Image (cartoon, rainbow, N blue to C red; front, side, top):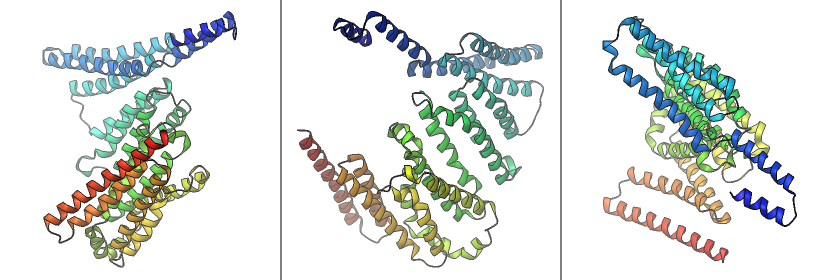
Length: 428
């Protein structure tokens, strides 16, 4: 309606003619058809998923009363229905994103259901992770055939489930991690292609799903040399921050930037955990054992993530401006230095606390200088968390700890109040 009113006003003032106005309306109508409302897209996918689940529940209710033939026909019929819908989309609705996303998601789930039902009907047993693996392999082509981000997210969930499922230690975790990374690599071309369409409704879901899935990898591979897991996490989270700081991703808003939010939040959480001396005392005790693990999976994965983070930084350093946030991008280098000091001396506990304090102070200062309340609060939260952590490993009385908590809370309130007051003054 607003476009029509604007065009009428332009025609009335003789800025454009009627023919040009009609062409503009046709252009925007075509764009709206190709790029449907995000709510329509999301509810279309949700409708397809709920329809499939509803059918399965109705089948499950009467499953025991069906003959083997009817059970088989039902399982195959569900898959055939998904294939017919997808064929219709390919022939008639190829340009509709809603139809492509919903149809491919339905077929993806129908395939998983069909294989599972057939195995149950004919008592075909096998490892659950193999079932997930082959389902992911058959699902990946659907991602590209329909350019479906919904199917990519479902497949990513399957890949993560495959990586984490390892009944009775049947397969070496390093081997499973390698297969998971290969499956993830097969999904990357679709993700990279989706970056060229920033208006894609499901692109933020991919921005969150991929880093969330990768966060499980260091913990999965931790076994005999778990201390190296912290090196892996610091490198991985720093890599997340660097990816999330790229202009193409950072410009989409903080809530849509899963890489940046998970990277920053994860590093802050690690700094709080490592500010206690428990980890560093354990590292000092196990230093000799740790040297024997240099050829094991934990070390190799930490080395690979560190090398990847360094490579990414040097390739994209022109797109990563040097500021207070650079400590989060390159913090993994300093942490590795502190980590190796920790294998020889307990001074590492002090160094990690100093590192966290400097990082928090730099971010807080940037927030004050640039009058950014979000940046200011992030730095203050990091500093306050470090101070609170020190309360738990000190011998202060509960009364004194309570008074310090109150002081921190009042300090946060005062700083935010003064910042808001300055912003209000600048606006007037």
